[in-house]
Length: 343
Image 1 (cartoon, one colour):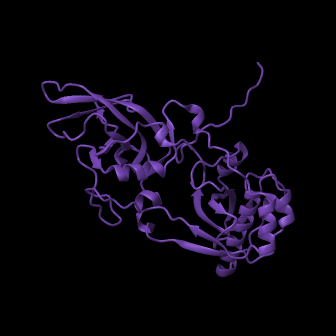
Image 2 (image 1 turned 90 degrees about the horizontal axis):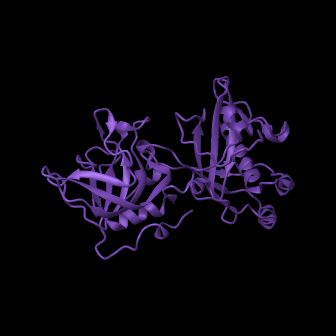
Image 3 (image 1 turned 180 degrees about the horizontal axis):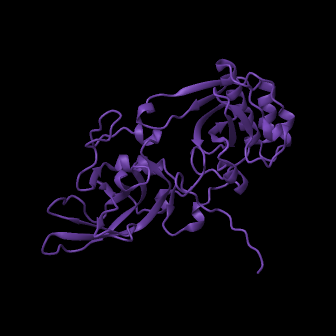
């Protein structure tokens, strides 16, 4: 992850910060095509932003496919043009960066964010954003937002690749085995303002884990994650009288496009892919072509159980569940590898 301080200039005393709305359409086209490097407004309606301000860019829900706003980029106000006869000015934005993935309405981080400079009604964004699309926030709020995001310099395509992270070591697996893996606490993240204040915690593991299998696994973090999710699904099946889940990738081999086969109360088969990571962010995980295609199989429900912030020492992690299919309509898909063939 890129340190935002290597992208933006140093903050100054009394640093200005804003969230600016983008996506204004004039005669059926975007008013500003390059919204990372420019922004226009009328000083008769809003005249608080000056050269040197730090900005974040927001797409309002009215222009996004899922009708949820997203904070997706930012930068630095390098200059502002002289106003024309009607009071219109244009700012030049430098030190631009993208937020990958964007911070979206419904994400627990932004739903639970504590605003000091603005008043927000509980579980509602109504009347929160300025009608002119220029929202003054404090520098402390700006800093908190960007420090929680994955910020990459604009135009740096390679930076969109999720950085490698250390796998669980063999010594850590040994330590888990010797101290018993029971008691792994998993906090389920529930999307949306309705669930913003709710957290569901699972505790396990109640089964005997095959630590030898984990030791031999190429990705020990992934192997442990599968055991944790399997235990969650076993507990759920037992509590609700459902058919017991099957660890398909372990019993039938890799290549299915999913790890666990489970069933709902109606007997529908659900294919569960587990993505486990020590990374503290839920988004940004990688999928194989086979997994993406399996998610599109209309005969079965497909879910991704994303375990993240997995800490083998404290035996804690967080969980977010994504529903398939994995398509461009529902998700932002970023290519991280390119296969090359000779012509």
